[in-house]
Structures are given as structure tokens and as C-alpha cells.
Amino acid sequence: MDFKQIQELIKMVNKSNIGEVTIEQKDFKVTVKQKEDPVQHVVATTAAPVMAAAPAAPVAAASSAAAAAPEKPKAASAASDNLITVKSPMIGTFYRKSSPDKPNLTDVGSDIAPGTVLCIIEAMKLFNEIESEVKGRIVKVLVDDASPVEYDQPLFLVEPA
Image 1 (cartoon, helix red, strand yellow):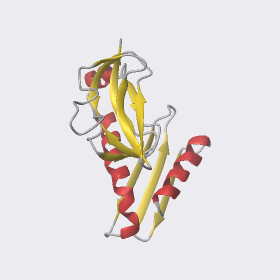
Image 2 (tube, helix red, strand yellow):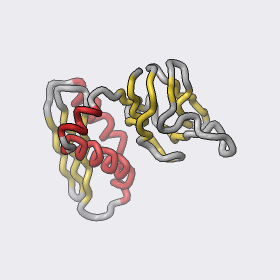
Image 3 (cartoon, rainbow, N blue to C red):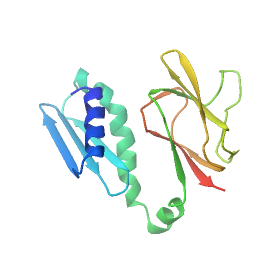
Image 4 (cartoon, rainbow, N blue to C red):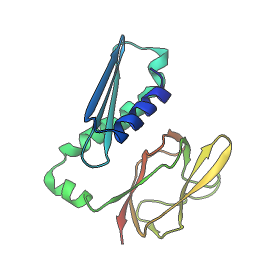
């Protein structure tokens, strides 16, 4: 199963009333769970190294971090309930700077307003500025600079103002 098929599976589960789907192949297992809220968890594991399963590794890393989030103490979870997650509108490469010799567009603690450029995502040699749609303060940057991102992947946590 390639990465494109996994994305299609997620979209189909998201649009349906299915709560959970698990697909197992020889060395590969994918589980897609849907909760009442629009958060989705994808867990991909491989029993043995397989070249076809290699693109799914970033999804597994991101989803394992997301799966660990509900296990936080109630106080930490209550504090993070009011945060807004800024997600990637496309697949591409995430950049925090407009060019290598420039400072980061935003950092933790930066105040943002609608229209503020948060980052740049390069897709097919086009550099797309991702602008804020909310007013607030950046609490956490969830993606490393120059790393690949997927559609709807969380990029920033913002405390609304």
C-alpha cells in the first residue's frame, strides 16, 4: 500500500460513518480511527524493512505523537484545549524562513494577526506563503525547518487573543 492509497483511505473514512478501519498486509499494518471530533489518528507499523513502506514513516511519527497527546495529565490537557492548530493546506516542504539568510518568519512567542505570514511551503518548485487566519500568539512550532509536510498536518499551536 503506497502513501497515496493511505491518504485516500483517510479521506474515505473521514467522509463516512466508519469508526475504525484496519488493513493488514504481509509486512504492513495501517489503522485509521475516527473520533467524534474531526481529529484522526493514523498508525502505520512495519514488521520488516520494506522499501514500499518507507514513505509511511513520517505519518507514523506524527501519529504516534498525536496518539500520546490524550495521555497528558488533565491540567495540561485543559490548558491546551483553548489552542488553535494551524494545519498545512498542502503537501510540500516546510520552511520557517523566506530565504536561508533571513530570520524566521515566526517564532514561539510571536504575536500574529490574520494575514501574517507564518511559514512557506514549497510544492513543485513553487513557494507558497502560509498566512494566519487567526489573531493570537505562537505557542509551539510542530514541524522542523526544511522537513516534508502532508496535507492537514499540524504546523503550529496558537493561543487565540
